[in-house]
Image (cartoon, rainbow over all chains, first blue to last red; front, side):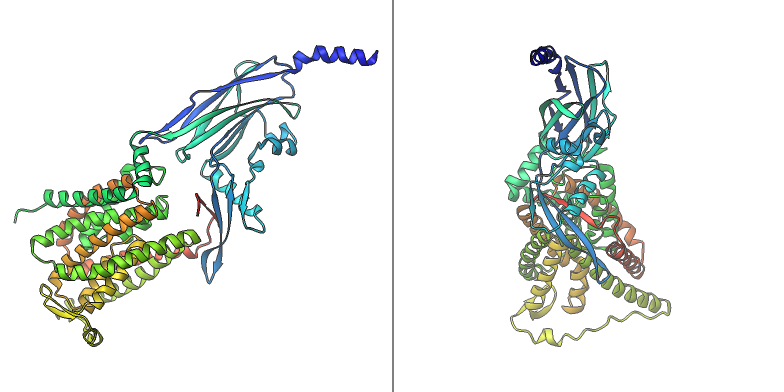
Length: 246
Length: 305
């Protein structure tokens, strides 16, 4: 009898438990042009079969392509600061932005955050080039990216337009790397993820910038000669223009 | 006012860079130097990675040297034979320098090597120039003409493989010019300089070339070395940014012409004194960066080492 009651209760609860998430982004491609100085995208979403506002949290994570990086530590040797120790990391993103309804430490326990890779402290390299104590180097990598604005955590930046409709503005600074980004939206209920959605975002150079970058890497000889030719031509033009009547 | 640099992969204010090119061009026109030794540290200071700064400054030097060399060519003041011999050493030196550059970059010691080379080079040349120009000024005030210090050329005369350099009216071994060419080629690749402030004293004091062909011949040598280094840097390190080069060169060639005019109004000794002070100031600034405690002892470089 008790078991039957429980089954009925669960059945009743089932549709309500399926709190779901739909999300989207304002643009799915960011084009780097010659006057690109950074931009912003808007991530928006709606909660379907919404329940109680209490205990509900939204986390938006935008993660850039992984980039190998080398962190070096300088030490003072003979009065001069010299790069003395280094750690190589693979699998850390070139860009990481997190927006959430609350500071993430209040949303879920650290293990849950680590499981989903949410938060700067959950960023762990997939491979570490031989180093006995990589942790200070990992912290330094995070610190560096925060300083230049490529990593950020912004709690309290998700605006609710109604009880179920939300949006947030994600800055994409000038120094971003080209490649595929992922926009992940998580719906938390009492510290557990109940729904998540991921949307790709592409950052790419277009037009002349792209052609020049490609040329520098695909046809470096022509590119180098073009640089030299341009310099010599401008040098010659200036000497003709400024030539004094003798 | 922002423009995106495709190789440096960053946005910069293009007005600042054109102004930088004009300013350094002005000084290089005024003092008759390429200006690489000023441009590279200044670019690094504006946040451009030192690898891109070193490789791209060379274009600026090529352009301003081109402008100066054409003026000398019209006066028939170029010893092409000497320039050609020096270039043999220059090509070898450049190849060595680019190889060393790539090696240092992998080791993570690029910035240190660039900074140390600068401090040593600027410090010693600045002090030599300062002493020389002060002595010349003093001599001028007391009404005497400053006699050029004689350097013992005995060992240079004793070297084999002698060759006649008609324009310079010299009959000397090809080894010293090749050696000087090698040194300047290597420094050009590592430091992003043309090396005028090494070639010119070497030609005057070591090779004893007549002063009237020194300027033109050194400019031809500088054009060739910087052109070759630019191509090598582009092919082996992918570090040349053509948009950055265009900005620097556009400002630089105009600045250089204005500088030549301003320089004509000042006396030689005064010019050399000012240049010596400038060289010492840049050297001192770089030395300070090496010894001052950094804000963060950790630094990061992206991409594969």
